[in-house]
Length: 384
Image (cartoon, rainbow, N blue to C red; front, side, top):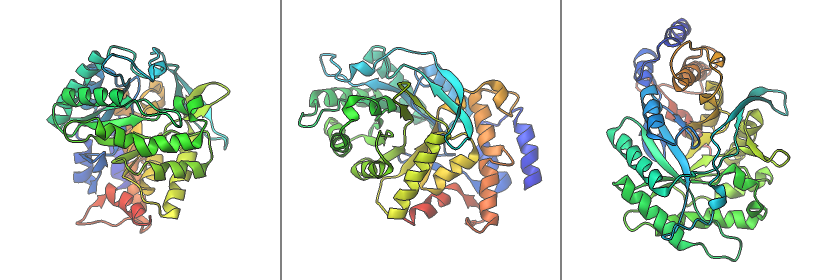
């Protein structure tokens, strides 16, 4: 198996097959099937919301590269008059800075920073993108899910229900089939905003936002994921956030860290260390929660499997799709293809190597002759 993996690593560095998950199942008897927001996926890797998912060409490139799912750039909710309570987040900035970042423990990884926030174009243009995303999703070639930032009130203030209703209904009509899949973004820039100073305020949002979104739908309620931020509070508060968010259908854990000094969000090993530490505490305390999708410094297959062992049924990436070409071992293909090649086929720290090592250590067993990625996630879940 090791020799086969080394040969595949070299071969697929020149040409990664579109259905590499099918090849892995046939050659290694490893089923990479995963899940995001209830959707079955051929493998666990998707693209998180951001500058890399704001037009149809990007979505089609992701489909051709073999990504399992994509979350669209986050749109800012508006009411029937076009008023947006979170309009300050509609900041135009397309330039992203990709740079190395050393963690507090001395480990080097990559991070991407940019000043932009949410969708800054007309809402109608976003609805056109949602229609394209729905067609791709219905075709079975790629799951593509809208993302929204809705009104978040201060303590004692009511939610702007008209904003929730108008935006949710418009997205559902553009999607064209029910239920609408939707990700609600609690962004890292929100963590740096004065709105997030009060813990009780954050917990209220997490408890009540799912109901507000579902109440805004005239048909079937949306299938809702909450992408949770890393708040400027301790790990125990992150756990309280997870408990408060149990009304969602899925949770994406957790968004980038916020630097107060630099006024930017950042990633790297400090981010994955905190995320994994909180997920380990969630597991130890046996707290109930919706299905999880991991995000944050998924830079190797080993990190991906660390998220999976703590219950994450899939992962969202952003930074790994933007590195200098010289940083990928693959010598051809798009950045998405090169990232998938690295994550799955690296013979030292890739997903295939990691699953085979877990089998050898007696931590993962074959069922019907196959190792199954989701069994790794379920084994973690059983300990909750």
